Length: 508
Image 1 (tube, rainbow, N blue to C red):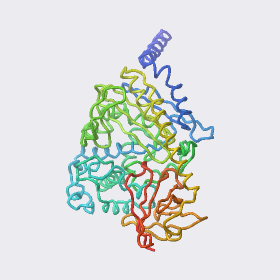
Image 2 (tube, rainbow, N blue to C red):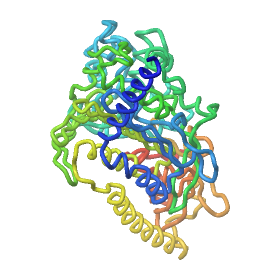
Image 3 (cartoon, rainbow, N blue to C red):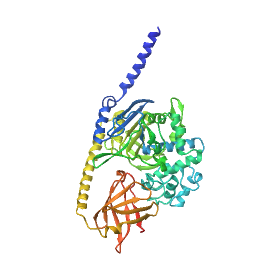
Image 4 (cartoon, rainbow, N blue to C red):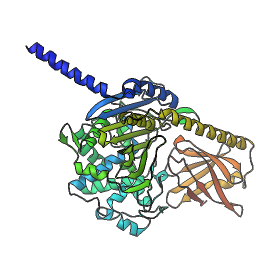
């Protein structure tokens, strides 16, 4: 009789598994592995990891490819990837948890908790509240100031000091502008209110209760991890390994490293009102606070399907898509791009992690999985995005060839090369030094040790700058001269880092 009971239980167990499998979209059951493996080749992605949560259960959790190009170390469900700005949802949720516990209010003025908090406009600093920090409505241009902060040797205190001096391009609460430093400030509020650093709070109140045992709060911690993905990018068609990002001075904006195993627990809790395995880890009210729209980004839209409204809550993008509310975010940091997507009405969560910052698979695959569960037509987003990228790269390659051809003609500069060398200073960033090495101008920045730009003449006062770190890209830069003297240079870096230019004044 016991044997019959065991057989019956086994039958019911496997029947349930089969029913769950049969209910999965055909794309997930039949095509996912082919799709991802093909895309890894097409996009030159060494490795990726994917997780899909549906109705409180993990229905997909897989690693693909390798942790580092040229190695045989396979990506698995516990491989750590830096998740970049997907860290912001953790920070916003942490602040909302303190709000739910009545330890602060999201409507509190920032200066209530940080009396020394300053911005370019003292009135804005006085009026800004915690929601303003978490929904990007302080008036800054997207990424404004990030060149100073990311990968620099500035401390968090020095970041806040410089952030206070940056003049926003727009009016307070007048326009959405992605502001990483504001999340750094929010992390300091968590410290002041809870008595714990942002990193310790995230570990003790979120990671540990959820069983996210491998996740790391700070970027410096990934160096000592064993099962970790390396950072990569693609430069002029060639895959290259690059250093990990050094962003702990602004950690709450993007320093977390995690795996699909750990992220599945985070996603399951977010889809079940903060509960995991029936136990409340995060108050439901805190989760709901993060999903209240605060900033209007636009009308939304989609290349194939119906979509309306693009909004931002607290640490989350939100949109209406095919009649559902989408709560999602992406993350990009040196060598990694990632995606986390929640469709609460469908109890669906999607996580895609990749270890190169030069691909659109992280979004394409999310879209593909999302559409499959919403019973929308298969679009092959990866191929669509790839074609866009290839067209763009072809144009960039043509432009780069034209620039190299111009450089090869040895165009005459307005002044002798020695006139451009010397010391420069930006009023907020600090100093930059220009030297002549092997007949070329080399630009080195005070707070970005080990990184430099090589400037080659394009004629007149125009130069072509190639940064040693490919993350910062290649840009045309121009000096301003008067009376046979160099007055300044306007420095730009890749849009991935910052759109806003920096004017460095020649002081010696």
